[in-house]
Length: 190
Image 1 (spheres, helix red, strand yellow):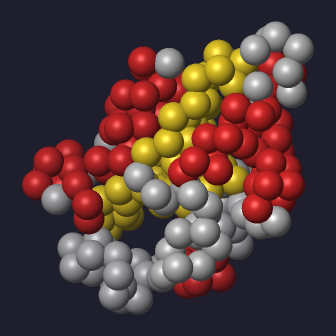
Image 2 (image 1 turned 135 degrees about the vertical axis):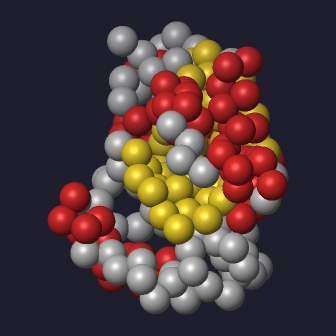
Image 3 (image 1 turned 180 degrees about the vertical axis):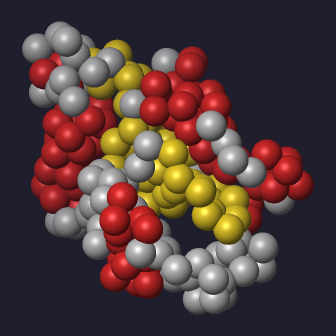
């Protein structure tokens, strides 16, 4: 069965002027692959694709990993960029929203609540080894996705992506709560 709608999240693009992926190019990559409905939001590597045309590479995608490989190849071909791609299904986004562990923070400071998605979730042992005691942040997990509240913002935290990568053994890509809700709404419309 074809995966008809997916959220494509690029890791580490358009940050600090490095690894530029213009939204127009990201949409073109989706269209070239064969999706007939392609939407980007913000300039941080967020793409929602749906309705693959029959007979196209997009129509042959059955898993999130296949969508990720198709978009990854498009980024290499079009822009010469080797970018990590995480693909999330509408069902996963619905589950992430339904299992929100920090509703007060989502309401009062949605930009300080980040949800991190992983192509390969960290192991339970890796998650257990993450010592949060020296950090003011609070973190919770649901099915391989993390929710982190950054009370002082994520820009100056010592709970950095590098620290998380070393401890968890995998990279993820984070989106703030407002963006997560917008992506979920786009998948519902798709």
